View 1 (cartoon, rainbow, N blue to C red):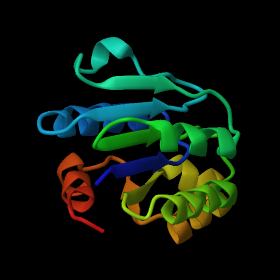
View 2 (view 1 turned 45 degrees about the vertical axis):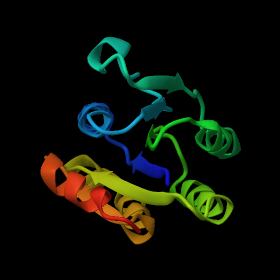
View 3 (view 1 turned 180 degrees about the vertical axis):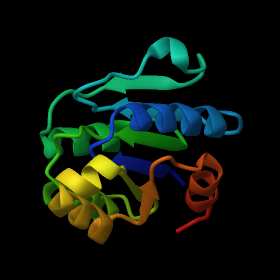
Amino acid sequence: MTKIIVLTGLVSVEKVALSQELATHFSAENTVTVIDNMARLALDRDELPDSISLVRQVGDDMQALENAIRQAKGEVVLVAVTEQAHPEKLFVSIENLRERLPDASIFSLAMIDTRTCDCFPNVRAALEMYADMTVMMPYDVESVIDYVSVSS
C-alpha cells in the first residue's frame, strides 16, 4: 500500500525541511519518492539520501500535479505543494486522488506559521478546514511522523 503525504501551506523553508526529514525517516524502511512542486524554493538533491527519488513538478496546475503523484513510484510519496496553490483546488485534487487510488493512504498536512495567521487568515481557515492535520510552526517532526505512520 502506498502512503502519500501532501505538505501544503504558504511556508517554504519549513516545507523543504519537513519534506527532507520525512523522506529521510521513511527511506530507512521504504522506497521513497519526493515530488517537489515548490515555487519559491526547490528541494536540494544533495540534502536527500541517494536512495530517494526526487521529481520536480513546476507550476500550480493541479491536474499535472495529480498526474505526477499517480505516476510516482515508491511505498511513500511525499509532495511539497507550491505555496501558490489555491487551497480549494488543491483539496479537490486530493479528494480525486483518494477516489482514484483507493488502496493508498493519503495524508494532507497544512503547515501554518504566524504570517499565514496574521496576513492570510482566509488561507489559514481553508487549509485548516480541509487538511487532515494542521502543523503549526515551529513543527515537531516526531508528532508529524506519529500521525502519518498510522494507516488510514
